Length: 156
Image (cartoon, rainbow, N blue to C red; front, side):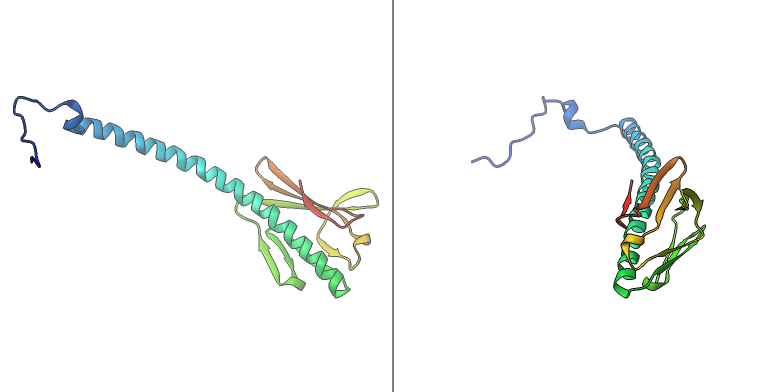
């Protein structure tokens, strides 16, 4: 019974048994570094896009909760607006827009869109204001709307 075969000195080592040379290793490392750098740049752009989408989703959720609070409490819920974000005192919410994200709040009154400086959601959904919030990041825009008839809050 043979457990180990003796090395045959007549057989030379083939290319697959030698391993990598230093030059091959350096080339592989430089390719890996270049790919890692490029993926980091791409990842930072997609993270900013995700922050932008998340800001819109959070606003939709907050407006729905504020509308529900107004109906359940039987009184209007006020939303304070600022260039940096918004606050809903009845829900103890104070939000700040992510970096590079801004918003333009508009309300339709007498058939015309006007810039809103504050917002009050009524206790009845039938009397909901016609509101549009445009959440912007560079050229990307997401519109969040409150339907004046149904009071439904939606993005897009």
